[in-house]
Length: 482
Ligand code: LFR
Image 1 (cartoon, protein in one colour):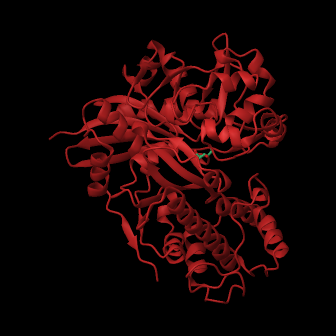
Image 2 (cartoon, rainbow, N blue to C red):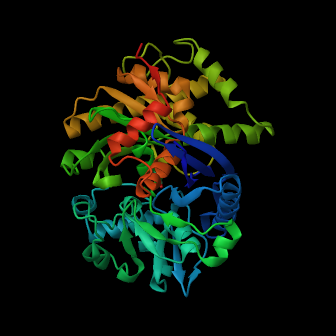
Image 3 (cartoon, rainbow, N blue to C red):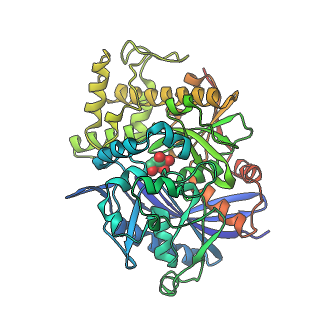
């Protein structure tokens, strides 16, 4: 059977990519068309995204994709969550802010003054993250003059098609979506002084957002529809996590490690709120019950600091191999957690002090010292501490998710970039006592592709069948706990 083809735009916090997806009855394959850098840019008023550069790379990538694969039938877009652009008179009002910009502190205090966090949780089901969109809107004076606010993937879709919508999985990260009805919580918006008019019409994954504007179609070389996917990258990643049962946990591991379970209904218990677990909307009305663990950000920011120090690039695979070879006990003494037979000093990967860009090794060292640990000597031992600390936080989050959702978790799927990090996968297996099934690395792009393909009638209907297709094409690598 000949393959059907679609194209996925997948924007991450450190890079974006355009990927062709080809689907047959028994396989889903990806071809990388282009990859472009992304990251915070420092402007006078704080941290932003260079959205102009991103959009130019997206359009170039789409044109190249169509050149390589004229059979492409549609476009889907996903990105990180919570960030947005404001529109007025058909124009973008300034560059979108980066969620790691610290301007939202005041917004948090003001929002919680009006609606205490416990009440917010009952309405939107979201864990507390200081950058959730509602806190950003609260401090963004430009909302008063804006006609619409569009989250990043919706902003790209609008530029491509001219239509303004809010895709539901990503809208669920704003804090303004009612977790039970999946509709805008207009009463909450009202209470917080957020104008209703900036909240666009909601669409669900699988719906067609629109067709390319004529000038874009001409530039790209094809007149294609843009189909809504799980436009929150984590929602797309969970679609393609080859979960075999309801007792399989997932970790979508890139800049963040999103650790949790897929559920049929939200868990809004006080204990879930206290553990800072979120109920984000997934594709097909599923709930992504998960916790944000600071993931590979800790490693990538450390590498960045060391490269600045050295003035030359670091060979990460080699460094990770050395980190893996650090002898038990040699990296330090205390602080071991879990069943692992490795004694390395651990720090709390979720500490808020590690959130903003900066000198990560110095901050981690300060945290270790503050908790009475010795700072590992040498980069391999330091990297070992980072990886083991992330793994310890992963294992803890899996245990908490299982407890809160009353599931007996029997395996953990790690998808995304972190699935290639063997040290991290093994450490997660060791510290959780559960088998880790690693891969696919490109789960987000796969989930994006599959939801488009399904909408076109080119892929099976249920999430379980879609996951079966992923598992057959991209067999996970197994790590057993030691
Ligand atoms: C992962 C992710 C997380 C979200 C964070 C900020 O890329 O989308 O799910 O909490 O980025 O948007």
